[in-house]
Length: 486
Ligand SMILES: [Zn+2]
Image 1 (cartoon, helix red, strand yellow):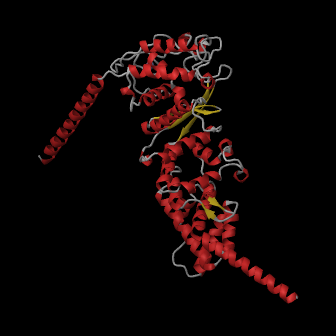
Image 2 (image 1 turned 120 degrees about the vertical axis):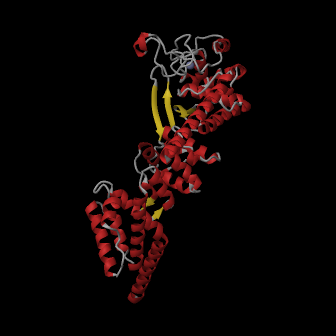
Image 3 (image 1 turned 135 degrees about the vertical axis):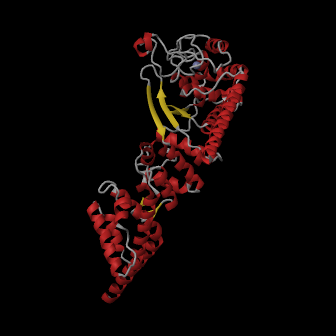
């Protein structure tokens, strides 16, 4: 009986929850249906970039707030900018042979106005209960197929085998086509062009706001320079600069934002359209956010600098922007950057164990148990080196260049510790197999780097003192020898 009663209670609870969520969905749907809106995000990077540009230009927080008046306003504001010679150079990478970029077109101003206004005249309220054949929004119908003159990277009108059913262009509705015309406003100049696309409205809002502010600065200074340009010529460096700058500049809870970020580095030149896509792994973004939270940005910049090839020889202030950086490249490729956290020459670490641990956990998927063992073993070896003053053993750990040697050194340390009367073992067999060298001969280098990190972190000051003491002794010996000779 009691069981039945419990079952009835559970079923009625589930039913009420179901009913509640249905009513909630229905209400939200009614709210959306009740509004006449023109845009909502589509997932297409060029269309969404254009929607963001319109939002920022008209001071709207989300695409659903955009009105026809905003579209008319952006046309009258932006056409004079686009007609400027510097801007038409940038636009050539987007829309080759459109009224602005085709030199044979007369009355560019009038032609561009006519083109954009005719698109506006075809944009009505978006009915999300309907579906259409636009490849981007899937809501509206296509009035006319579009070619690469209007939409970047969709092939050329003449190459009919590029498109389905042998048609001469791609199916974009007037609203999506209109939005794409403003994507240059939030693009970034980096030899070719960079377009950022993210599901995070915070990331996109801050990014679009900065790009639009740069154009407003160009207007007020009456000095037009084309798409937002900070002198970056290396797309990976530019991508990390944009992300790190956004995290540092704006106060948000970035660690829990978990955005997916793609960056498109492209050109739509007629002679050689080209596209490279970079994806920022979400854990990498979380790690960069954590750097700020731990207040370790200056340490992190030291780590990043070590990734530039020949950093010491970089003389000019901005020269680094164009050099490849192996820290950034490894983060994008999912390779380890542990070795950049330590400097073997100066026996010094960058950042601390907490920062390194977050990187290992979030980006390298290392478990708590493994991290705990590595820290514990690193601490024990540090203690052993300090107690026995056996710096030679540290040299050997640093110099070990194969797994067998490194393993043997750990054995020697353990033997010494037993001789010294140590009660606890350095590690158990299970810790050795599962935590120190889970992949055996593969990956032992990372374990070596992690143990050295912990040893340097614990002993750096002591090692510097020992070095000073040693050179003082040598100097004194030399002085005594000289005085004896005399
Ligand atoms: Zn559409």
